[in-house]
Image (spheres, rainbow, N blue to C red):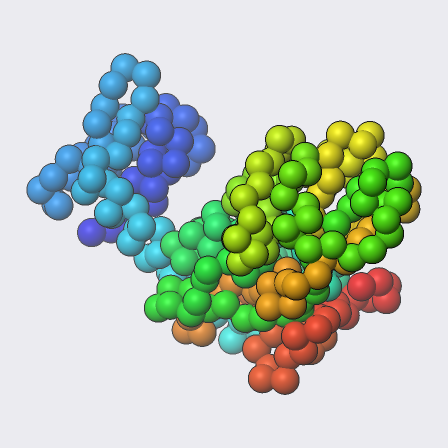
Length: 313
């Protein structure tokens, strides 16, 4: 089984189209088709169901995709490790991040990394924590900054705590909660109209856990996919939001209230990493810019700063 066959297979699986995959790989479509057929003959099973509009993975193809991505990621890590020993850090850093993760200034972190390692190409993907965990475990991402959900350490994924903070209610100043000006319990919020993120985002998962722990059912009427839209809707008094406490600093016009009875449920930022032997040199170099470094045992659970050249964190 040749690496180029695996590379071709992964490209077709991701593009769901032979022509687009061939254009991406800068190879002929006939050569790409021959490469995939060679892999199917070797494995003695079809990997794709081909139609006139798209190609779809067979069950065997889905099983191979997970392993192929992991193999290609390990090969890339091996090449980058050799380059690092030679004193040059190059290659690619594939990073994932949620929006507005607490305790980290991701843009400043990446700017500092680029100044130190200009030969490394940076690729950033923003997504929900569940998707990021899957992509780190599969090898599609070198690491990710996400929010702890139900992840625990596995053979493919390390979960390292970085920071934690309580959840806060944000509402319009004219809302009845703002007039009361007191901390509230999830039960007292049960009948409210909620603005929240899509279910895979960390703040939504954390808020769902808060209400589930309190035995309170709630309905999210206004569902968004970015922080500013959420704040705009609350600012127009269309609903309230339960969000990480640092969100209150993003919109001074809103009233912030503490949530009582949720001390065990916090918004926890984590680093998602592959096993140590699979962590790329570029990922290790990025982690060294955290203060303190992620892999040090004395990592603080309350705040992880970022050492950036311009002093911003």
